[in-house]
Length: 168
Image (cartoon, rainbow, N blue to C red; front, side, top):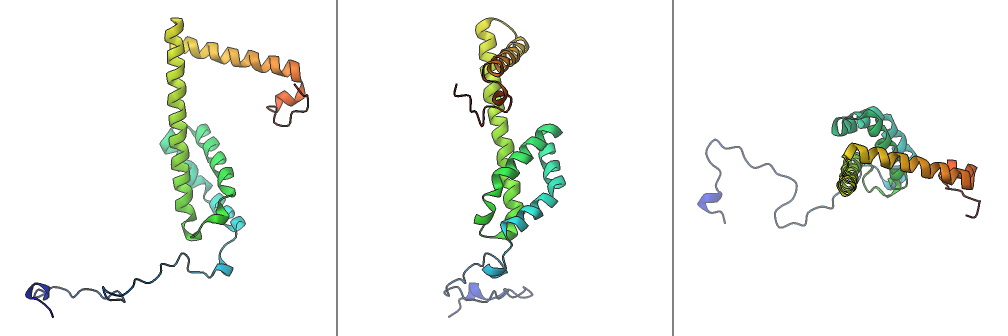
C-alpha cells in the first residue's frame, strides 16, 4: 500500500527501474565482461600498461617534479607489479590499479626522503655543521666505503655484491 508521501509529484520523472525490487537479492557483481578463459594474460596486461608509459611518467613527473626520479619510480613500480598482474580480479581495472601503485610509490619515496632529511639534519646539529656540509660528508663517506669494498672484494662489489662469491 502506498502512502501519500510515496506518490510521485506532478511533473516529476518516474523513478528509473533498475531490474530488481528492493527486497530482491542484488545480482552478483561481474568482475569482467569476458569469461575467465578469455581474460587477458598477465603478459597482455603488462604490454597494455607499458603502452601507457608516457601517461604514467607524466603523472609521476607532476607529483615529484623530477623526470629522472619519476623514471626510476616508474621502472621500480612496473617491475614490482609484474608478479601481481595475474592476481587482478578485474583486468579492466589494471590501469587504475597501476595508477594507485604509482601514487603509493611516490608517497613512499617522499616519506623515505623526509626520514633521510631529518636524520641528516640531526647529524648536522650534533656535529655543529650545516645540513649541506653534512650531506657532502655523507656522500664522501659512502664513496670511500664503496672504494674500500671494491678493493677488498673485487669485481662482485661493483655489481652491489648481489651475486658475491668472494666469501667475505
